Amino acid sequence: MKYFFTLINILLCLPLNAQTTDRGIDERINEAFKPVSDFFSEVVFFQVGGNPFVIYLLVGSALFFTIYFGFINLRKFPLAINVVRGKYDDIDRHSVSEKPADNLADSDLDETLRDKSQEGEVSHFQALATAVSGTVGNGNIAGVALAIALGGPGATFWMIICGLIGMSTKFVECTLGVKYRDVGPDGTIYGGPMYYLNKGLSEKGFTKLGKITAVIFAVCCIGGSFGGGNAAQSNQATVVLKQLIGLESTSAGAVIGLLMAILVGLIIIGGIKRIASVTERVVPFMAVLYIMACIYILSINFSFLDDAISLIIAEAFNPKAIGVGGIIGVLMVGFKRAAFSNEAGAGSASIAHSAVKTKYPASEGLVALLEPFIDTVVICTMTALVIITFNSQNKFSYGDLSKYDKAVEQTNGSFSLVIDGINYEDVSGKVLIDGSLYEGAGITSKAFEQYIPYSDFFLTIAVFLFAISTMISWSYYGIQSWKFLFGRGRRADMTYKLLFLIFIIIGSSASMDSIWAFSDAMIFAMVFPNMIGLYFLFPVVKKELNRYLTAIRKIS
Image (tube, rainbow, N blue to C red; front, side, top):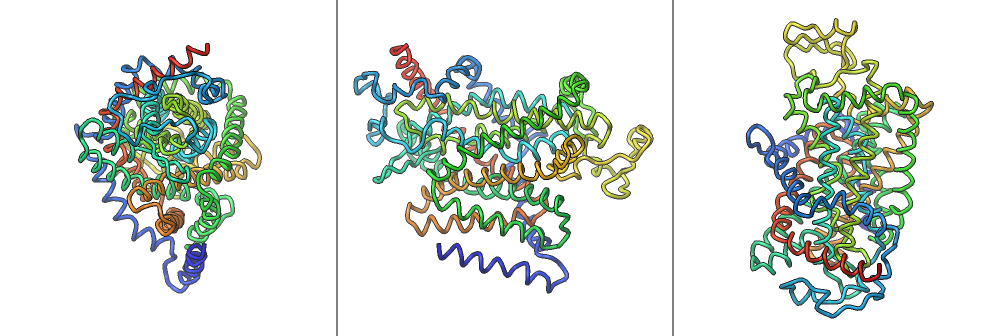
């Protein structure tokens, strides 16, 4: 705790020192951070055929797992709901007799041969809430808005498709997370891709590959916890807070970030049990509240819904957004934002799900497949429909106008643009507004403001709660990876937490472009080592699924 307060004392001085220079601390942090962001973005998003290879990897893998497991994302959806409800909890309380061999998969290592019936720290629902709080964040508010601003309504269609097929990937990785988890002497659970890569690949005879990929994943996951799970969240929370309060100070971002760092720091000291208790209450509340607000706005604009849905489908295959680059361009925008939002394929959620109380790994895999549905198919789609109906009055243009040489910025993000002989200023009778300049959550905020009085307060609270819950969950993901690399001692634990809190301040201070580029790179970097494990170990998942379904049939 003394290290935490030492950090606070140091950071409290930064905004004051910034006032003695011509530039604020926000600008200086951004200048230092941008080259780092650009470097990682170029490395992770290397292109094949003009598009990032990692997107092909995610989509191809999701399709493969969906087909291999017989469209488990659709067929077993009702079963997943029942598992969360606790309908089959009796199975975990030994109401079904098993022979010892029934509890094992072929070629299990000695350390995985334990009876897991009493191991775990949280319930199915708590694990789901913790993992959902890591995926349901400002990617649902700011990320969706950014996708639509750049790719147009058609990006929504591809986000939904990515969410549906991503359910199968999430099932595979979270089943493996429970299967190969490690249990400390005090009963604390340690799990995630770094463990199933290490143990699982060793089973297959690839011990060295398993160790290398486990280390690579742990490093990438730590980066992901600093980026998408932290800096991107604090960045968007700061955007809406500054917009609400009207702060223009060059150090305002650092001050807001410091306050958030103090709040998060007080929470994450408690570990997964306290995280589970917080997220179990906060996540359902804020998700339901946000969805209700979206439904209210859509009910007001009910007459525009048909047009909005038609636009989503039509522009998925024939995009009209300026500069999006045709169907491949809008597909990439949609998949990129959906994958960032639901993290299917990144492996992060398997860390939270590994802490569940169960002796059947597949039971938690089924629970996990609900996440992309909740996150992308429901919440992201709600946000998209609100923004598209809001823009039925041509509030802003779809596409990034600023990339064109013939786009002349006027004031407040307004552009006069001529492409292929068409003067876009004259089409609507006014100068177009570049939607990408609203900084993500700004677009959603404008949409809410038009239909709900004082909704700027509501959305600010929603963005703030989404940000805090995501940061709390990702701090757990990151510290699990940190402990895998540096040991489980108290000093290692505190070192990670201090670094995590520093990145909250960096995220609040740096520009949206730099933060989102870094965040995307860190999240997607996790995909490469994780997918190696999934492709080697998916037959193990099949056996675990059959074992669980057999146990259910015995009590049905």
